[in-house]
Image (cartoon, rainbow, N blue to C red; front, side, top):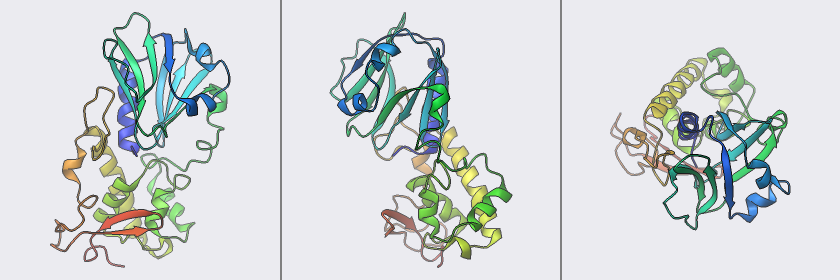
Length: 273
């Protein structure tokens, strides 16, 4: 699933392209998305002008005029592509926005069809479940507030980092990478981590997320930006996806274990429990 850097990359790409463009028509081939919306919502989209595009956690909020917002969650395999009209609509193109006076279209592509697109009134969006219950943004929370946040929980650190109501935007890749850099075992209980370690974790989260955004995200599966280009951070991964390989810090072996319902990659020698 695209995480904060990938979703931020897509949101920034859309922000460069879409504001001021007008939706001429919409092609829809997605019963699940249709069921998520009110009757007549596609007709409502016609003639709407794109405004500001923002990210909240792993969600993309596409502002439209007349007080409407498109709420997009890419889930596992969703993409938003800006591509030429001449490219034939594919079987995984669930929505295609044709734009007035534009030779390109905006396409929501999702081969697993888990992704969500909902049209809501702008003043109602942030009250929706899945947005209203999100935790703080990791690039915005201060270090003292970050430490206090972890002092309020008594649970394993890896599941805590993946909990979007605890901290919004992190997933498996960046949780593994930040815990590795901070030398914290993914099973370590949040109430047993020193303040020094938590400060280090806060700094490493900010450092890694900012670097991954600069490199347009991590492409380890199917992720690509709005122009179809992959990200570049996968070249710098130190733990995630390196099961059985040597730790670049101590020479031990990176292991992969299931913790909760998700896998974790770490070095048992460097990240001691």
